[in-house]
Length: 248
Image (tube, rainbow, N blue to C red; front, side, top):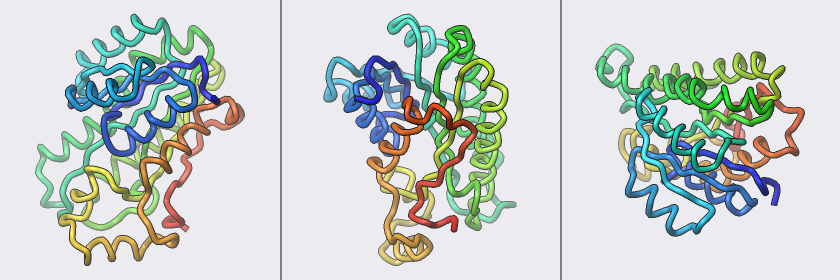
């Protein structure tokens, strides 16, 4: 029960890595708000997981939507101990000069602007309380980029730098900020990363991972729980790979 008595919010929490983090946090005693643009999926998951979970509809790229989410969560729980910025998207694999402006704008809005917006609406309360843990779900793409995913790679590199900058600035206020860098996993985004989900493409991706498998939601939940728990009280500004050795 490492998170007993704590309140957490996980964006993109209705599926994939986000759902793995939600399940782990609940198993460790936290109350968890599952925030997702897919309101039905968030509601279904919250209903399945019990009274300690609630669902919130949000478009993390919209200031108005994030503000409404913050009002709802802080109104329901009073404060927030843990913020997980997990919501993310990618563009399909393409030459960097062939990605559309619309796709570029959407990737940066969801993967980067969202961190700015959640900080605007949740950090003031954390600073006032002088405690809190923020976890940004970045990617190995921000450390060891793959070709044809350039603007997605850049958005995750931005998130890693944002994590370190936030950690330095918020440390005197008692707020820790860390990141996780997963390798590709069994999530709704996997097909988008690969372009096509075939045995041959999976084998090509797996050949770059020394441990020989994709990241799982359970892997992410376990790592997230540690970094957001009091066991990691002296850890801030870290971008930890959960990647089976891919970045070695």
